[in-house]
Image (tube, rainbow, N blue to C red; front, side, top):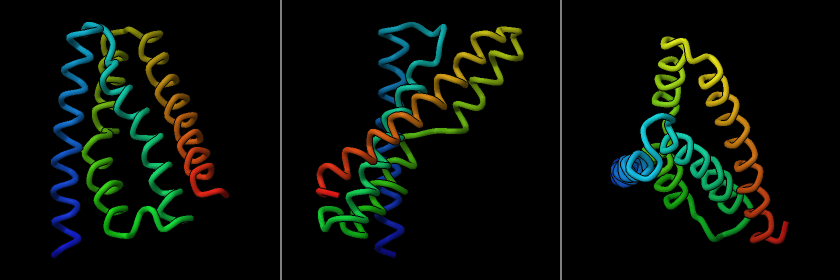
Length: 127
């Protein structure tokens, strides 16, 4: 039951953070491109790699905190389903270049930030 509650509360926090980031992005950058989804997925890619590296190589992040932060917070914060829906929307509208740019930039940025998170974790852990 403890683990379920950790995921539950972490997911709620992550989902609220995703909502706020998306709302901010639309307000600041406009609705023409899904900057908010791109940002949360990229930031989440960095953070989950960092958290996992620290949890697997140090004592800084224990199993409960890892569960709270990865499955809970990052699970609620990042969103493949929204990314997929927004991508399909571009293609349905015939905006092929914009859709392809979004897919490519999301995959590349999330991969690179995942590597950066892994490297940051290695740097902190001394590995």
